[in-house]
Length: 205
Image (cartoon, rainbow, N blue to C red):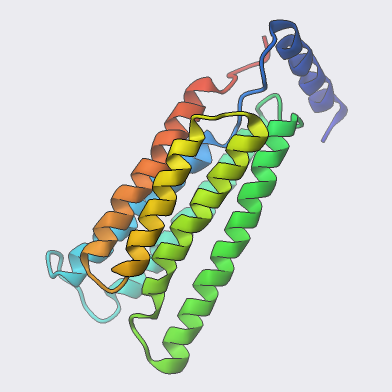
Protein backbone atom coordinates (compact mmCIF):
# COMPACT_ATOMS: atom_id res chain seq x y z
CA UNK A 1 0.00 0.00 0.00
CA UNK A 2 1.39 3.42 -0.98
CA UNK A 3 1.45 6.43 1.32
CA UNK A 4 -1.21 8.10 -0.83
CA UNK A 5 -3.54 5.10 -0.49
CA UNK A 6 -2.97 5.03 3.27
CA UNK A 7 -3.79 8.71 3.57
CA UNK A 8 -6.95 8.22 1.54
CA UNK A 9 -8.05 5.37 3.80
CA UNK A 10 -7.34 7.41 6.92
CA UNK A 11 -9.34 10.33 5.56
CA UNK A 12 -12.15 8.00 4.62
CA UNK A 13 -12.15 6.39 8.08
CA UNK A 14 -12.29 9.82 9.68
CA UNK A 15 -15.29 10.81 7.57
CA UNK A 16 -17.08 7.61 8.53
CA UNK A 17 -16.37 8.16 12.21
CA UNK A 18 -17.76 11.68 11.99
CA UNK A 19 -20.93 10.27 10.42
CA UNK A 20 -21.16 7.48 13.01
CA UNK A 21 -21.30 4.57 10.57
CA UNK A 22 -19.20 1.56 9.56
CA UNK A 23 -17.13 1.37 6.41
CA UNK A 24 -19.07 -0.36 3.61
CA UNK A 25 -17.84 -3.77 2.54
CA UNK A 26 -16.04 -3.95 -0.80
CA UNK A 27 -16.75 -7.52 -1.88
CA UNK A 28 -20.02 -6.89 -3.68
CA UNK A 29 -18.50 -7.01 -7.16
CA UNK A 30 -16.89 -10.39 -6.40
CA UNK A 31 -20.14 -11.89 -5.12
CA UNK A 32 -22.05 -10.62 -8.13
CA UNK A 33 -19.41 -11.90 -10.55
CA UNK A 34 -19.27 -15.40 -9.03
CA UNK A 35 -23.02 -15.62 -8.65
CA UNK A 36 -23.60 -14.89 -12.34
CA UNK A 37 -20.66 -16.98 -13.59
CA UNK A 38 -21.68 -20.00 -11.52
CA UNK A 39 -25.31 -19.70 -12.58
CA UNK A 40 -24.37 -19.55 -16.26
CA UNK A 41 -22.00 -22.53 -16.05
CA UNK A 42 -24.38 -24.68 -13.98
CA UNK A 43 -27.27 -23.95 -16.34
CA UNK A 44 -25.16 -24.84 -19.38
CA UNK A 45 -24.03 -28.06 -17.71
CA UNK A 46 -27.64 -29.00 -16.91
CA UNK A 47 -28.68 -28.25 -20.49
CA UNK A 48 -26.00 -30.56 -21.86
CA UNK A 49 -26.81 -33.29 -19.34
CA UNK A 50 -30.47 -33.23 -20.35
CA UNK A 51 -29.62 -32.90 -24.07
CA UNK A 52 -31.23 -29.49 -24.35
CA UNK A 53 -27.92 -28.32 -25.79
CA UNK A 54 -25.90 -30.41 -28.26
CA UNK A 55 -22.64 -31.72 -26.88
CA UNK A 56 -19.75 -33.99 -27.70
CA UNK A 57 -17.30 -35.82 -25.49
CA UNK A 58 -15.18 -32.73 -24.92
CA UNK A 59 -18.07 -30.31 -24.36
CA UNK A 60 -17.96 -30.47 -20.57
CA UNK A 61 -14.19 -29.97 -20.58
CA UNK A 62 -14.60 -26.94 -22.85
CA UNK A 63 -17.35 -25.55 -20.62
CA UNK A 64 -15.36 -25.81 -17.41
CA UNK A 65 -12.10 -24.82 -19.07
CA UNK A 66 -13.83 -21.67 -20.29
CA UNK A 67 -15.25 -21.18 -16.80
CA UNK A 68 -11.73 -21.22 -15.37
CA UNK A 69 -10.45 -18.75 -17.96
CA UNK A 70 -13.31 -16.31 -17.38
CA UNK A 71 -12.86 -16.67 -13.60
CA UNK A 72 -9.15 -15.86 -13.81
CA UNK A 73 -9.75 -12.83 -16.02
CA UNK A 74 -12.62 -11.59 -13.89
CA UNK A 75 -10.65 -11.86 -10.65
CA UNK A 76 -7.78 -9.90 -12.19
CA UNK A 77 -10.09 -7.09 -13.29
CA UNK A 78 -11.92 -7.03 -9.96
CA UNK A 79 -8.64 -6.96 -8.06
CA UNK A 80 -7.61 -3.80 -9.91
CA UNK A 81 -11.04 -2.28 -9.26
CA UNK A 82 -11.02 -3.02 -5.53
CA UNK A 83 -7.59 -1.43 -5.06
CA UNK A 84 -9.06 1.87 -6.24
CA UNK A 85 -11.66 1.91 -3.47
CA UNK A 86 -11.16 3.72 -0.15
CA UNK A 87 -11.62 1.86 3.11
CA UNK A 88 -9.69 -1.31 2.23
CA UNK A 89 -7.88 -1.22 5.60
CA UNK A 90 -11.09 -1.01 7.65
CA UNK A 91 -11.64 -4.00 9.94
CA UNK A 92 -14.79 -5.04 8.07
CA UNK A 93 -13.02 -5.01 4.72
CA UNK A 94 -9.98 -6.89 6.01
CA UNK A 95 -12.18 -9.49 7.70
CA UNK A 96 -14.22 -9.88 4.53
CA UNK A 97 -11.12 -10.50 2.42
CA UNK A 98 -9.66 -12.97 4.93
CA UNK A 99 -12.86 -14.98 5.25
CA UNK A 100 -13.53 -15.21 1.52
CA UNK A 101 -9.88 -16.03 0.82
CA UNK A 102 -10.17 -18.95 3.23
CA UNK A 103 -13.43 -20.00 1.59
CA UNK A 104 -11.81 -19.86 -1.85
CA UNK A 105 -8.92 -22.06 -0.70
CA UNK A 106 -11.37 -24.55 0.77
CA UNK A 107 -13.29 -24.63 -2.51
CA UNK A 108 -10.09 -25.17 -4.49
CA UNK A 109 -9.19 -28.14 -2.27
CA UNK A 110 -12.69 -29.54 -2.70
CA UNK A 111 -12.61 -29.20 -6.48
CA UNK A 112 -9.11 -30.67 -6.76
CA UNK A 113 -10.00 -33.66 -4.60
CA UNK A 114 -13.25 -34.35 -6.44
CA UNK A 115 -11.64 -34.12 -9.88
CA UNK A 116 -8.75 -36.33 -8.77
CA UNK A 117 -11.23 -38.93 -7.56
CA UNK A 118 -13.07 -38.74 -10.89
CA UNK A 119 -9.85 -39.49 -12.75
CA UNK A 120 -8.51 -42.10 -10.33
CA UNK A 121 -11.76 -44.05 -9.89
CA UNK A 122 -13.23 -43.30 -13.32
CA UNK A 123 -16.25 -41.91 -11.47
CA UNK A 124 -18.02 -39.24 -13.57
CA UNK A 125 -20.36 -38.43 -10.66
CA UNK A 126 -17.50 -37.50 -8.30
CA UNK A 127 -17.67 -33.72 -9.03
CA UNK A 128 -21.32 -33.71 -7.96
CA UNK A 129 -20.07 -33.76 -4.38
CA UNK A 130 -18.80 -30.21 -4.87
CA UNK A 131 -22.27 -28.62 -4.87
CA UNK A 132 -23.41 -29.26 -1.33
CA UNK A 133 -20.05 -28.55 0.27
CA UNK A 134 -19.60 -25.36 -1.77
CA UNK A 135 -22.88 -23.89 -0.56
CA UNK A 136 -22.10 -24.75 3.05
CA UNK A 137 -18.77 -22.94 2.64
CA UNK A 138 -20.61 -19.94 1.18
CA UNK A 139 -22.96 -20.01 4.15
CA UNK A 140 -20.13 -20.14 6.67
CA UNK A 141 -18.36 -17.24 4.94
CA UNK A 142 -21.53 -15.15 4.86
CA UNK A 143 -22.09 -15.79 8.56
CA UNK A 144 -18.53 -14.76 9.39
CA UNK A 145 -18.61 -11.58 7.34
CA UNK A 146 -22.03 -10.70 8.74
CA UNK A 147 -20.84 -11.03 12.33
CA UNK A 148 -17.53 -9.22 11.99
CA UNK A 149 -18.90 -6.36 9.90
CA UNK A 150 -22.18 -6.07 11.84
CA UNK A 151 -24.20 -6.57 8.66
CA UNK A 152 -27.05 -8.59 10.16
CA UNK A 153 -29.04 -8.74 6.91
CA UNK A 154 -26.45 -11.10 5.44
CA UNK A 155 -27.37 -13.86 7.89
CA UNK A 156 -30.60 -14.58 6.00
CA UNK A 157 -28.54 -15.35 2.89
CA UNK A 158 -26.18 -17.48 4.98
CA UNK A 159 -29.08 -19.61 6.18
CA UNK A 160 -30.40 -19.94 2.63
CA UNK A 161 -26.97 -21.04 1.47
CA UNK A 162 -26.78 -23.69 4.18
CA UNK A 163 -30.25 -24.93 3.25
CA UNK A 164 -29.24 -25.14 -0.42
CA UNK A 165 -26.11 -27.03 0.61
CA UNK A 166 -28.14 -29.61 2.53
CA UNK A 167 -30.56 -30.17 -0.35
CA UNK A 168 -27.72 -30.45 -2.86
CA UNK A 169 -25.97 -33.03 -0.70
CA UNK A 170 -29.18 -35.07 -0.63
CA UNK A 171 -29.81 -34.87 -4.39
CA UNK A 172 -26.23 -34.47 -5.63
CA UNK A 173 -26.57 -36.87 -8.58
CA UNK A 174 -29.89 -35.55 -9.92
CA UNK A 175 -29.53 -33.51 -13.13
CA UNK A 176 -31.89 -30.85 -11.79
CA UNK A 177 -29.41 -30.23 -8.96
CA UNK A 178 -27.43 -28.13 -11.44
CA UNK A 179 -30.44 -25.87 -11.90
CA UNK A 180 -30.87 -25.60 -8.14
CA UNK A 181 -27.19 -24.70 -7.83
CA UNK A 182 -27.61 -22.06 -10.55
CA UNK A 183 -30.58 -20.49 -8.80
CA UNK A 184 -28.82 -20.76 -5.44
CA UNK A 185 -25.78 -18.94 -6.81
CA UNK A 186 -27.93 -16.04 -7.93
CA UNK A 187 -29.79 -15.99 -4.62
CA UNK A 188 -26.96 -16.24 -2.09
CA UNK A 189 -24.11 -14.65 -4.06
CA UNK A 190 -25.41 -12.32 -6.76
CA UNK A 191 -28.20 -10.67 -4.74
CA UNK A 192 -26.02 -9.85 -1.71
CA UNK A 193 -23.42 -8.66 -4.21
CA UNK A 194 -25.86 -6.16 -5.69
CA UNK A 195 -26.78 -4.91 -2.19
CA UNK A 196 -23.13 -4.41 -1.27
CA UNK A 197 -22.35 -2.72 -4.59
CA UNK A 198 -25.08 -0.17 -3.99
CA UNK A 199 -23.45 0.71 -0.68
CA UNK A 200 -19.87 0.94 -1.92
CA UNK A 201 -18.10 4.29 -1.80
CA UNK A 202 -17.52 5.50 -5.35
CA UNK A 203 -14.87 8.05 -4.50
CA UNK A 204 -13.47 9.72 -1.43
CA UNK A 205 -15.78 12.55 -0.36
